[in-house]
Length: 89
Image 1 (cartoon, rainbow, N blue to C red):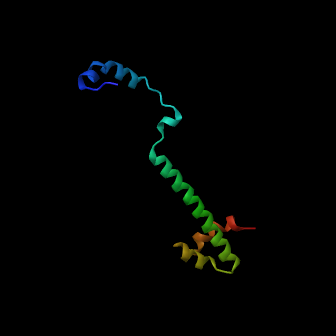
Image 2: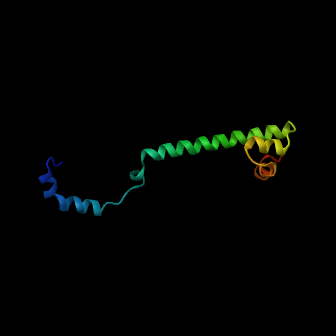
Image 3: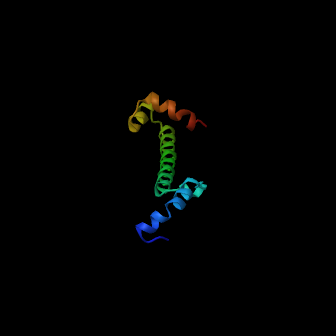
């Protein structure tokens, strides 16, 4: 491993060739953000499952789509369109 600027400059062609010929392997492109993104996606999926279960429970308890929609921050019709087919038994 070169230790001085002159050594780096002396080996510039070698470094350029290594850089230009580099072919990344699948694991080479992984970054710290990949782990964070994956974790957040898993968290979102868990939240989506929890929301779906809460909507199912609310409907089983007799809540209207309008009430559920209000809790979701949307209209009752939008809530019905999004969840009705997922909770149908």
